[in-house]
Image (cartoon, rainbow, N blue to C red; front, side, top):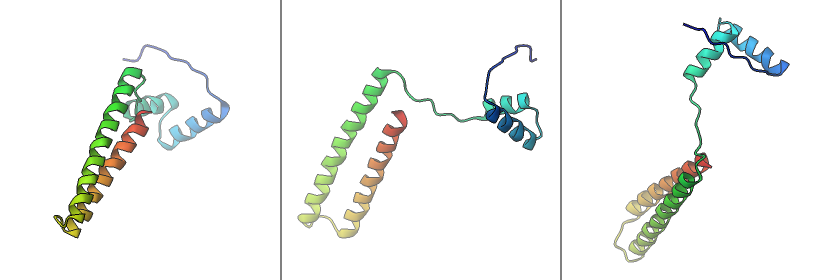
Length: 109
C-alpha cells in the first residue's frame, strides 16, 4: 500500500522527458519512476577509502604476477620449450586478464 509521499525538484526539460517516456510506456510519471527504481541496475562505486586502497593493492599485486608469467613465457619461447601456438594462446589470455583488471579498477575509481 502506497502511503508515503515523496517530492523533488527537476528542470522543465527533465520533467518533459519524464512525461514523454512515461507516456511511451503507457504509465503515469509515478508508475514509471517506481518501475525504473525497481528495475535499474546502477553500479555503486566503492566510497570507502580503505576498501579502495585494498582493491588497488590487490590489482597491483596481480599485475606483478602477470608480469612474472609474461617473463616466464618469453623465456620459454626463447629456450624453445614452448611452441608458437601455445605462446600466442597464453599471451592472449594474459592480455585478457590484464584488460579485465584494468576495467575493474576503472569501475571502482
